[in-house]
Length: 293
Image (cartoon, rainbow, N blue to C red; front, top):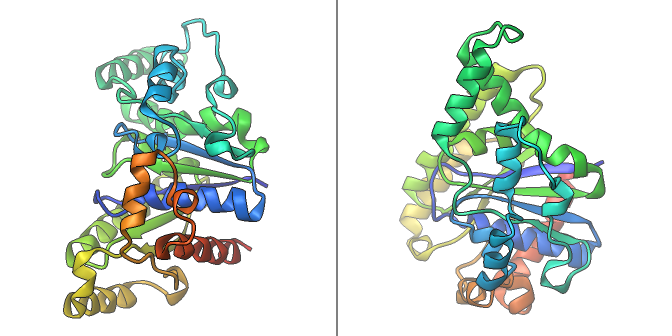
């Protein structure tokens, strides 16, 4: 069965995209899995981690990004030529089985979404409040995009934007599990707590349909990690709030090779496979598979 996994955090700059693309690469290269990355962040970091800006520009000019599919859901009355399968870029990074649904710098227009849903709530066949119409749209948006191609993959990894926007909420609803990357810093704990509160609210809202589970928190080290006083404070507070099974034992070390890989538009595990960061991602992938099994 296909496992749909979202990588999310309320706070930016915690290594969310780095985690997503390197886990996906290890799943394909080392474990022979079929993996699709879906880029739901308008910063398109996941997209530019596996293809060049020139390639992205060509795809965008041809409207071969996820924004086309989002608009297809928002305005279903417009005749469309392409499906989800047509948007997917196969074999990125020269790895068969490693596919990408590219993101876009303009994913959707909030006014258009609100207008379309308001009009829909007024239709005689709907007969419901705007809030219910919005909730139904939120529930179906990402699910309807991935459903036609879901069976083609072992894993679908969705890289969500920082914060808690429409696409992130819809991705959460469409997921089986979520990963929570974090820096071992005091402010990072705030992002974890805020996200957990919002996901609890979503679970209440969508039960029994939403069976989402936290697969685990992954710590990605930063410069302040070297200060043990701060690290110990954060880790102690997190251990109080979460079950040990919800914390990955593998942490990603501070490694300049991981950051440098972005310049080559290639995941670190391919660009510098022998670096400390790359080896940690490989170990983390094994731990992830153990948790899923």
